[in-house]
Image (tube, helix red, strand yellow):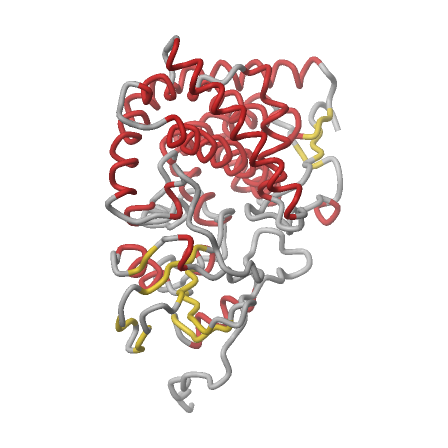
Length: 404
């Protein structure tokens, strides 16, 4: 037996792996695992020519996200996926593209609205909404597109209720939100969608200031946020809250139907629900990657990341790191997936994670309980995937139930 030498740092910088293996809709690009084996941090050339880094190991990704010397300021970032040119500063109210102290101020105001307690109170509402949608699916026959019938409307209703948006307007939002999240959308279309959403929310903010009701935007009107800040926060929460959870519900169902033993375990033991949510978050990691910019020279994994260089953190690669999760490529609902980075980590960790957990923890088990014979209505390879989106998942998910 001969021992493999420790791989020497590669001379050639890598580019961001994006191609998934045909027939493996749940696995990250295989190249990510190969790179992670070489070393958890490698030199990367960005599409705009910027020379930075790619972090794939769980420990190093976590370290970058926890270190305040790595900035989230949008104007300092380079996209690992496409050449976006010079990035403007983040829009007012967009928490994801700013650092402390502004970030801290917004976050502090919002955190009170996303407490575990408030989310628990919303659980009953989620249970009601899921039951109504399951009833409707049952009435309409024995097949459905799960995305349209269930995965999209449930979080849409919840985020509309949470923000105080009239549900009648949800179609408008979903269309604009999905345009914003489509990587291939024309710049013009994206700008138009953002403008429309912003104008809509601005009107809503003014209405809530005049007559507050019991919802998050009304709560926030009592603080010292300007109309512009409140509108920006509303846009961010709406876009973030609609699409990610909808994808997790649909894509999570697809994963369970593709792993029948795991679906059976969930049916047999509803108490597995919370654990199932964490494992699905780890296994699927639909929101990826993240980027941070070094504000000063920082030593990381024995390498020097220079001030101004960007580090792309791959949540998908980190969540499949065998050093953190044994047998990481298996979906195992009995696994304690604690420490996964599906909601990020550090000061920018997902603000709506409790709401997302409640929605998934109710919606997925309820679906399997209601339709014990739930199955794909098409061969798995015919399920259309959303590869051109910032949030990965299924485009449609044709399912069937009833007697085979």
